[in-house]
Image (tube, rainbow, N blue to C red):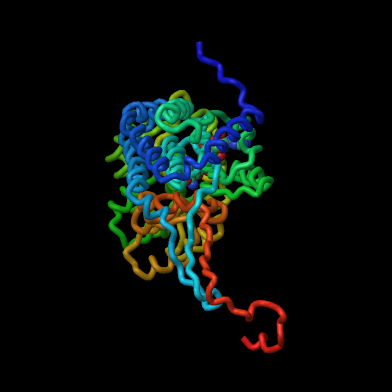
Length: 465
Ligand code: NAD
């Protein structure tokens, strides 16, 4: 019989926060040695349990082994290794110039931990989206409570078990659960909340944080466009669009291409090449392939079905569209010339459907993108330098990749985060350390150079500065 979990209510949440706060207040998490030890243990956790982690994500939504390895394991290990290599430097106060008014003096920006932080994560990259922020939080010297997503339950449970085994549980805790557990946690006072998920819940998180003046990082989603010009290597472009869409959890990824915009004249060639490459990757019957994740659950399957069953997109499918409710599978699907007011164009798709909009001139795509909410990622395929410059200058998005999709996320020197409706704040690499640190301004003075000027009486002569 499955073990019943104790009720996790507000009182239980209060106890958890009190325990980790006591640990934080003891000062141990601030020490360089503790931080390094914890990040090393996290790396060990991944090294020693890689096989089980990959199998567990597979059991949650049939994530292909390669994707689990490349997108969860490898990225997580890289984060740990980078933090271990750079931590001393990240922690070192940054000396800055001072002004004439403080002469003689020196000044520094001193990073200090924020305290006790809450990390709430999404289901779709369950290890990475949970543990990658934990690397930043620990490296920055905080105590952490992590709430993984209940939608990938096997991963959530394995994470709770492994964190309990490898990390210092007085300062790093996993609380499993869904809305009621998260709500109990959100009632508490935190020093930062780092949330990954939908904008709907992001608003709930931010409202709860506001009660305690708690700062938030919100890593949300949105509709990430791909603009395709005709001056391109079409085969490479199509492969990279497919890798970023269906090769990322079968489209269930926050920065997966959500829709394509291309010119009317180029659309037939683009569709044809996408179809050819899709067949090359997933075979003639993609229902049979092992290289696509399934839809995570029946609710998401129903949500995606609704997008396809919308009258406004009737007759628009030009490839795929097969569904198997029992197996929770939907094949890679292309739709051409869908109306901009259809459901598929007004909601984040987060699945294997890819609508293609057409415009007269490629520059017209800018208006289409900018008329929507700001996306988490925006992509452009072109060899035209002027178009690249215009795209970077005119399109507001969390991140941009030119002639590729999704890979900007792997560059640790780039901040990863949204803007506007796609979120606020960022992380990855040093940005993760910064996300969980306060930059304390420190001015050092001696007792020399005491200017009488600043003290009363404020005579007229003192106005001539
Ligand atoms: P979700 O918003 O449903 O859930 C996210 C977290 O919030 C989960 O831990 C869940 O338990 C909790 N939650 C759900 N309802 C809640 C409520 N009423 N009150 C308090 N907590 C609640 O998101 P999801 O389905 O896991 O993920 C999909 C969304 O996340 C998409 O919009 C996607 O674009 C976005 N996303 C963003 C990123 C990013 O890095 N920016 C990464 C992955 C996913």
